[in-house]
Length: 234
Image 1 (cartoon, rainbow, N blue to C red):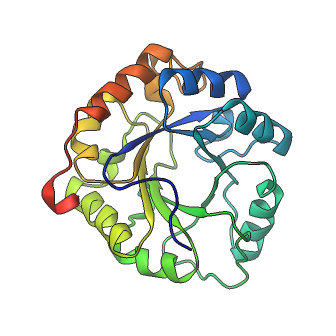
Image 2 (cartoon, rainbow, N blue to C red):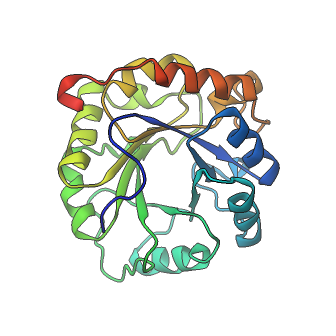
């Protein structure tokens, strides 16, 4: 399925929110993509469908996504995705291990799904062709552990660049996330992903379970706007 809505000409800002009030705050502060996620339940804690619907409604004209958990196989992933397919969000996200067998995976019709690979598992651009063949519309790397280590503590920039480049080659939307700080924006955005994902770095005191700070979101928007992707990543 072709990747809709997000141009490769500019790196977008994804902000994860826990409820409709945070969605409205992120919208007004300039987030490009508003992501429904429960920060109290780990890296990909899914929210109840009714909460996701409220987030989608509060996001206005912004793109929306929702995480659907961390299933262990294709059949479980199908059930998790189906539970959120009617909530009104534009994208769904599901944890997917590198080299996982896609047997039993049924993706919702008309709802682009992004595979989330964890940095601790050592993903690379070599994993992208199988994701495209399985029908995913996008792929991103996040960190499973939320212990203070950031994405680049697990994977070097050249490997992340290779992942983003492979996604572009195969027509997949790409994303990078994982306890990112504002100071990570220049180096990561220059790699040319479709978006950078934030939660803790946009909360007061950097606490991902706390509330979002609109000033931090606005600053992230400003820093992203100032980044010019490297020619090989464009």
